[in-house]
Every structure is written in structure tokens, then in C-alpha cells.
Amino acid sequence: MKTQTFKAKDVKSAINLVNTEFGDKAIILSTKKNNGFVEVEASDNDDIIFDHKKKVEENKNFSNVFLKELKTKNINSTLNDKNKVSYLNKENSNIKKDNISKDSKEIFEKIRDDIASLRKEMNGMIVTDQSGISDELSHQTPIKLRQEKFSPEIINKLNYSFIGKSLEDGRVSFFRELSRKLASNDFSRLLKSKNIFIFGNSGSGKSTLAAKLASFLSDAKQTKKINFFEVSNSSTGLSDVLKSYSRVLGFNLNDYNTFDFKNYSDTSEWINIFDFSGELNFSIQKIKEIKNSFPSFDFCSILTIQSGSNSEMINGITKKVEEIRPMVAITKLDECWVGAEEFSSLAINNARIGMVTGTKIIIDSIIEANENALTKYMKDNFENV
Picture 1 (cartoon, rainbow, N blue to C red):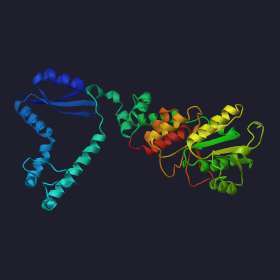
Picture 2 (tube, rainbow, N blue to C red):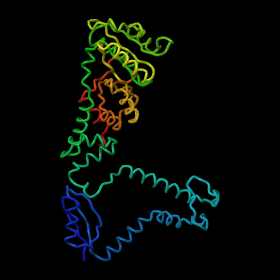
Picture 3 (cartoon, rainbow, N blue to C red):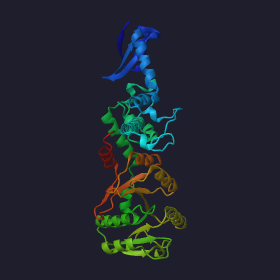
Picture 4 (cartoon, rainbow, N blue to C red):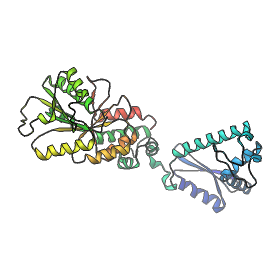
């Protein structure tokens, strides 16, 4: 009777070796991975088997572990005859606050800390059966991506990008493939467009983006022939924000109702930027009205999504604008960052990111969100993957 370590390429093969050597009586003491191989420590020694089973049984009873600690500090005297347990931080009629000693409070604090630590560790765990433990996990790249909060759906969809590669090569390959899926090809079209519609949720930075685009296009095309148009359902007049930008940049600000969609000519030298104020539903309805009423009117649409938007919000927004199929602009990037969950939601909903921008600077603040820029952003911000 002895204890022995068995090495194999995977857990199943190692366990087969254990069964061949020791038979059904053997017990597995530990498993670990070392230099690409799985090492399983097993024994058929009766004493070792007995001690191991006893230890496992003791560890199973989570309550007894705490009760044992409590007994050593003489806290059992604070429990009633029926051994009812009082909840932490809540007063119980059977336990008086004045009777709880300093040692008792310290133990309760330690228990809370241990539970919080356990929760944190459990949140990072991936549960899998024996078939899931193999070298085909490509050095745990998908598990690392899951822990970084990339969605299982997008990981599975792009798994071809990292299978068979090391962790470092796999993560970069995944980032690049995701960036390729997210990057819009419409930025070049934006440079050629004479009519630009900017819309999104209230507070997502639509007017600021309108001003930045005006400055960007003015420099790129060497022109001052740019008009702002505010599209609003309000009767209180033009917004002060857009008025301020028009004065600073020296571009005209007009009411949407003054624009002649019917007689508009693509030969015009003017660039028209339409800022859709108000709620998203109003903007979508107006854009659809323009498309239906003036089918020959050509425009480029940009949907503003504020960085830090949660995945549920992104899912809701992208579903609403499916018919319009706008280019996405990630705004306020200097105030918050775009996380793995947000990128996953955008990719799953086939959204295309055309540009990213911050809030504070107007001039030279628009960055084209091409494949290389998005890949670099992910590499810099997801270093734990």
C-alpha cells in the first residue's frame, strides 16, 4: 500500500493510470497542472484514505467550522437553549447588545470578511466537468476573457481567433478580431457627406459632437460653409448650447423647419449638420419621416452612445435604431471608459463604431475608431486578460 503521483496529458488519462495501478479502492488526494501535464496524487493506503475522508467530511460542515471558533471564545453562552442564531447587525431579543464582548465583535467582523472573500473568489470561478479540463483551452484564454466580463456569446462566436494560440497571442488575436467586427467603414463616407444627422439619448453629447464634427470637417475640407440645424420638438427656440458653439466656431445656426428637403441639391457646397435634440424615440421618428418623405435625400447618420453605458442600455438603443443602421460615436471617453460588457453588447447587436471622442476639447478631438485604434484600446485597458 502506497501513495504515488501519476502524470498524463489530461485528467482522464491520469485517472485511468490510477485505476490501472490501484484499482477502485484508490482515493485521489490532489490534482495539479505542471509544464503542460496533469499530475494526480493518489493512494491505496488505508490510513491515508481514512484520514483524507475524515478531513473532507469536517470541511463539508461549514457551520461547525464557525461554531468551533465561537466555542473557543466562549460565545455559546449568548445563544438561547434552542441554539437560535441571531443575524449579524440585527438585534435579537435573546441576545443583549451590552453582553457581546469585544472578542465576539472581532470574530463577527472576521466572519464577515471571510464570507466577502469567499464570494469574491466564487465570482471568479468557472465550473466545468472533467471533459472541460484539457490543453485545448489554449492556455485558459476563454476563461480569462470571461473573468474580464466579455460575454460568453461573443467569446464563442470569435473562438477561432485564439484556439491553438498562447495566452498572449490569443488575447491579442481576440481583441483584433473583435475590433475588426466593431470598426465601421463609414468614416470615409462621413468625409464626403453633405448632410449629417446626429442623434442619441439625452445627455449623450450630441451637440458637443456636432461642434467637434464641424471643426473637424472645416479643417479637413478647408471650408467655412457649414450650417448647424437643430431638430427639436420644443417651441422655446434654439438651444443655448448650440448657439454658443456656432458663435465660437463662426458657423450658421438655423431652425430645422427652414431647411428645404424637397429642393435640396447634392451639388451644394454647404455642409449641413443636424443636431436632433430631445429623446431618442423623437429622433428616430423624425429621421424615418425624412427618409419616407424625401427618399432621394442622402445623409449620414451618427448615433451617440456615452461611454460607461451599461449593456442593457446598449441592447435597447441598438434594437431601436436597426432600420436606420447608423454609425456609432462613443462620446465622453475622457469621463469614463468602455468595458468588456459594452464592447460585447455592441458586437452582438452588429453595431459599428466609427469614432471616439472626449468632452472637454472641441478642436482635434475626434479619433477614427478603426481596427488598429480599437485593438490598442483593448490591449491597454484589459491588461488582466
